[in-house]
Length: 92
Image (cartoon, rainbow, N blue to C red; front, side):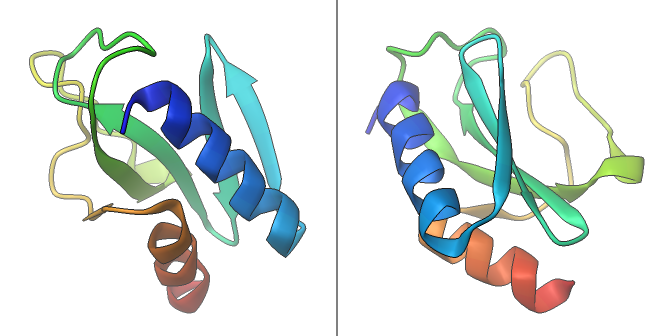
């Protein structure tokens, strides 16, 4: 799955659950309760045609972005948009 396909999947899951999302620089960030969900790639500057690593879940006040990997270290990564939203909503 590419990051572009992950963006579409996350938009569809948000629409089904009536959750909000925003698009920033060709990336979708979903708002699920207290948490934000966004797709991450294997590279720091991953383009939308690159492969997807997963959907990262984190609170807004715990933003710890690592400049070498592009991930927020120590935060859960889910393999699908559905499971990421389920996890975020259950933790809220």
